[in-house]
Image (tube, rainbow, N blue to C red; front, side, top):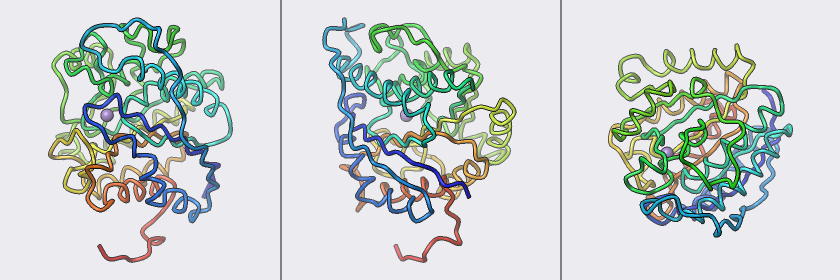
Length: 311
Ligand SMILES: [Mn+2]
């Protein structure tokens, strides 16, 4: 098994979500033993602590619907800078969220880094939502519903970075898996841009391997880098209640672990977001522990490695 130099980047942003609590996410992962679990698998872990948002308060607010624009823009800039630096090093960054607005910075930064390394970036978006709204289409104004559209270079994100996005992700390199809630306007944007969308019905009818294996094969054939963005609401709320945007009918325990084990087997994943964990809504840490277990599967843990434990 490949041993990675894993770097934890805490991003306690909660201003992109509609309710408070994601600020506690990074520390919940630490408390649930994320570092210890990866170290037990032979990986080296460095936790650089929590980032701070840059100051973006002079930017013009794009419209009256968008919420907490200056704070989210500040986080986007600091995460973009960190991700573009880490993405060029021989390390495996794990971004501890924080709500999904953190991916405004991480995906764009990893994409810039991939370009500098001369490789295409692919993105696997594990989420109940497609997060493909723009500042113009968002109805809630919560910017955690926009990062994938921004990363793909859609227009209407002026002022977020302070400069145009130089290296967007090619939409055909994006695969959204597990989706079961899309707004009408973002559906149009998604269809137009050509990103891969695999909804829960497809998982029901075809199963995870038939959907995920062809995507991984495309990443491999292109000698690409793969960024995985794991939203807690990808999972069924019955096993993962600690998220502010639950949608019934999510991925089961077994489906989610299968995704992670296939990702590990592929050896293709180079960076990871863990987002939308809201510990304030958790039930005795069960969601934080599940996210830690899923991450351990992504880093190579097998059933054989798991000590039996009672629940
Ligand atoms: Mn999301």
